[in-house]
Image 1 (cartoon, rainbow, N blue to C red):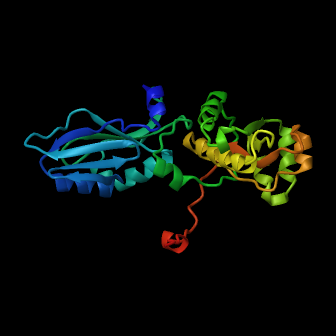
Image 2: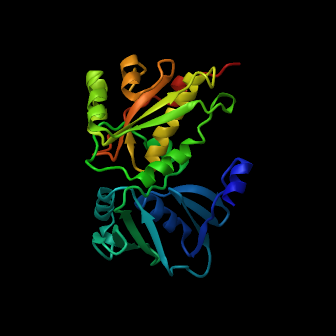
Image 3: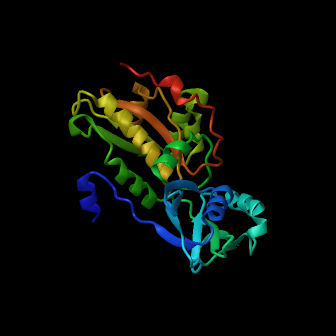
Length: 291
């Protein structure tokens, strides 16, 4: 099925859980105001709410569906603590670690008695981001935890990077994984504060391209680099675009041919913290309509 979907050029929506409710407005208010769901679709007597990849539908019915367990997960333990303070009036337990399942969680009940689990996975490599979440939340990370990145996570990222577009499908880009501490320190020192994040990470990746394979090798490498940055964020890994690394001393250090292009050498690791989003101008200020 996966290969069929890829051949068709798109991914299909997985599905929606629908539940019966007696008070659709109360339920909509609770899930949007208290739990951060958004109203995804509204049709006659049914609403569909979205929280990340979870689509949850409520339809006005005589019978309330309140059996089973709704589990909502968040990327960080601190968010669970924040929600507990916000939802104390609805909670039936306090946040705690469940070592059996590797989660940090607590339970609440919604106004119609549905049991809801709010939880965070202890394993940071488990990430499930929608497309808009990926684009809205990615940040440049310059400080990293002292924790190695598992090879199995890296190869999941590399697999995603195979689909980076290139001119005439030349696939002129390639990646160099750098884990040697001495080399990382040398790269970090090359441009002072601008390249110093490389020295704070357990590894770095150089995204390069071969001009013998494409006349648009610079564009190929830059697209592949951003593809890599986004793929890392999906799996909870931070990166930072380090510019101006396309230089002879770097190429000699990494055994890269002098005529090849280096788009960036980015540090890669688990973020020590995630910075607040910087201010952004509205779309109306940078979109120009030509007519």
